[in-house]
Length: 298
Image 1 (tube, rainbow, N blue to C red):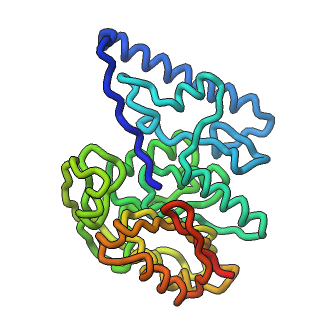
Image 2 (image 1 turned 180 degrees about the horizontal axis):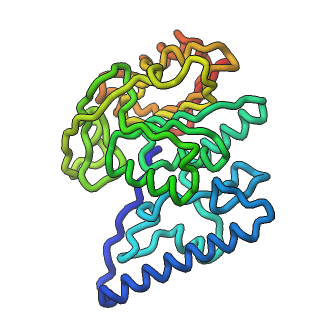
Image 3 (image 1 turned 60 degrees about the horizontal axis):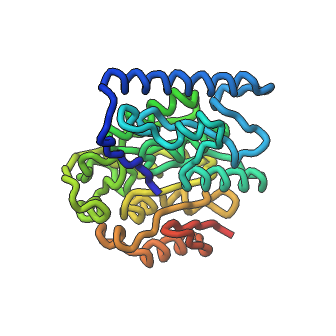
């Protein structure tokens, strides 16, 4: 689910560096001009999003941060090009999924917060926040937290998103976390899990804070959706949310979690162990969507 833009290799014939930087700055100014003009032309402007489509939540657009729009001096990201051409902003799959689930649950009369575990650069968090949903985002990697802070500013949702510089787990304390140098995704508690997709990247170990969700979420606080993408540590996150997940039908959250058997085994767990645990707290219906599992109480 985590998504990081690939860096593009410069073309063999490049303009002088000052000219490239000037062109990049011009593109950014034009981008902000277009965004501002579109927002001001809407008869019902919102303080929560730069581009608003209030009648269709699944079409709500948002920015992440400038760092997620590509390496500008080398090549503008495709979404900048799409915006300049007046085309729809292409959202990552998890962002679209989060908005669709929230819209569906609202249609059923449900409300509550969105808990984003493994927030990465905030794509899922912003998708929920621009719909007016309060968000608790958990992300232990400092570089990713910087991108989230950028996105909070660009999307004007700082009052809706609470960010925890910590890894959600089943224990309160510290945990060793493995980060891949040069990437914003695929960091993991398991060193093996961190390097499964990118074996050539250098990996460094960090000490980060860990906290169970049950320590943060009030027992009376309504939770609409729980999304977990933590590169194989999903079982431990779910165990740390036992009280939350034990709530009765209609109050227990909709769950989306990554169920990648290779990553789970690298963290000494398995898909079966997760499914058994979820059944023990009342989640008897789970469906597979690619490498993601969606679970609800019925």
